[in-house]
Length: 150
Image (cartoon, rainbow, N blue to C red):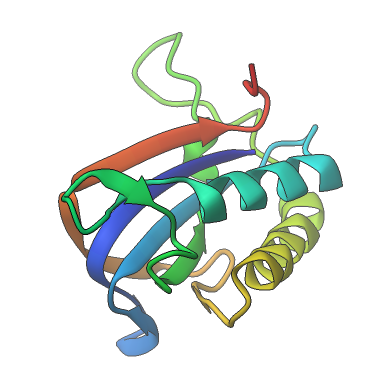
């Protein structure tokens, strides 16, 4: 499971002209699910993201977590995070899980993340054409892969 985490001042997801989710200070999380992902990937990744110290403390040092700042979150599924670009110019998505595998894992991730954070989060709609707006704060953008825990 791969995540691109962006610290934001604000973010929103618009689907067919309708705002599906909107947050202020927090994290926009793009999540890519691959065939080998399972519950242990979800648990590890949720805990890692919620507790990652990437928000500034009173001294201006990145020392606070999403929990510490009582921030919000939006999670958007994005299969293109598993693009293979080794051959040619057209990315291959053979590692990305098909919807029958990815949708239940995405829903499980959202549920587990809400539990770790202690509140509801915003989401996109799996497979929809989404317009994601964000104001990256910092900018701070971090990529995490549950297969590279070392």
